Length: 308
Image (cartoon, rainbow, N blue to C red; front, side, top):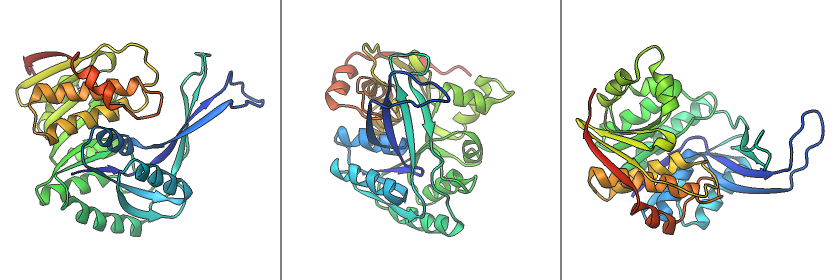
């Protein structure tokens, strides 16, 4: 089984309206909600493809109850701690008016107390003993330790569990004080991490910390690097409906292939197909098995030696 950790779950909503004007009333014509947060998207994608998965989160209020209930409807077991407050709601405003199409508004979410963090670590120690692979994705609630990822990685390393991370900012910088099995990072995140260093040097630094490095480049596809090997993968997608959650679905694809003990080409192929399949579905952060199976046959693969 794979444990997907979503430290900061959310209720993701599509809000449709004709136009958006400041200083006046804007009426939403339709609203549709989905269970969200990066780790939730990963869990839903793996579950859709028949991979045994459990979702661990930090749950708060009615929003947290909704997210868990929606996951249970999909036969995804959940675990984790409950805290005061409400899990955040994230709104994506959609319109034919391209001036504001896919504008997002994100709520702050709950605050994590020191005692909450201790309880969470205790539960995490228990959960990781029961799984083969751990995926930690996304942000933490307010007041979480700035080295939260680092602490969780070190707990996994102590018991010999493989962990894949997807984070940014101070959490990523602190995580690099340790080593981990895999990382998914996008082009903007690696530029932010590089700061005044070159992208090449930053990739080299990451390679020293991880077995698998998945670097996504938007429409240019995926660079999957392991040691001195590199696979570049991409697939053409027509009729894109939503890109929200595509990176999370790509993480799920990589994890699924690793869980199945497939080779490097297939890991890249799965990752790209999962990410692209999400684009064909208007439901936020979701994919359909039939789309993955169609796309996976059309992924273009290029194998090369990694050049630092």
